[in-house]
Image (cartoon, rainbow, N blue to C red; front, side, top):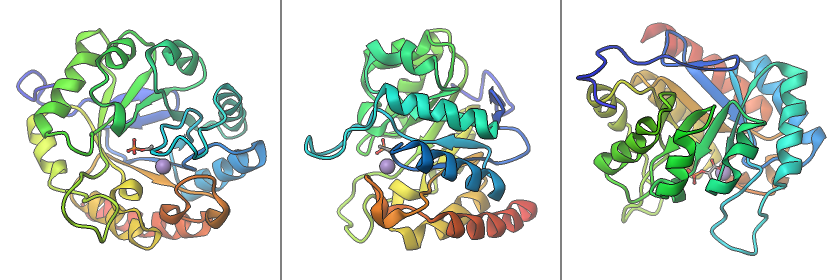
Length: 262
Ligand code: PEP
Ligand code: MN
């Protein structure tokens, strides 16, 4: 992953999605896939606002076993429908090594969640997969641990890895996690892998998401991943940190002005 090997940031392509090139990669969509109407409506709205990939969880790693666990393969099928309708590439989480081939059959980008950053068998399986990988930083992982986790995937033969800062656990409780934007310049001088910021999980509050997305772009992030839902108040997961489609469109208009200035 080192910059010494590649002086330029790697451009990663996955279907119609590109990150690490000139344009900022914008991955948007609900925390969880809930229904065909929900995912297709979100996909159309985020595409119209300028998103370049659709996110949506089908296998959900929830803190509580009593929370919604996702639609699993039925959710993957709905993501594929949304891709057919919009052309957006699909980013979705895979939580176990046995499911990597199944998920890679539906998605262009496999998301490795924060809770699984050090699931080495999962990292190895993603290293063998024919899909790009969005590797999220564990909430208690150091930068070196994140980079070594990325090495597992790269060493397995998959060079299409992007790193995602999604916030870490600190003593501070006013945000769900603490989102260190210094990760952007740090990782960019250390590695050639594109750096994506998640202001949704990084803050845990809808009203903060747009500010931190703009700050990430101003800091030079290669991409952002943002939770968007047509009706955040009734979302099955993470509604309190989710933008409505209208709020996402406003955020994108503001982000475009910042991206032009960077
Ligand atoms: C998510 O993207 O919905 C998610 C579960 O994120 P994280 O793994 O960063 O908590
Ligand atoms: Mn979420």
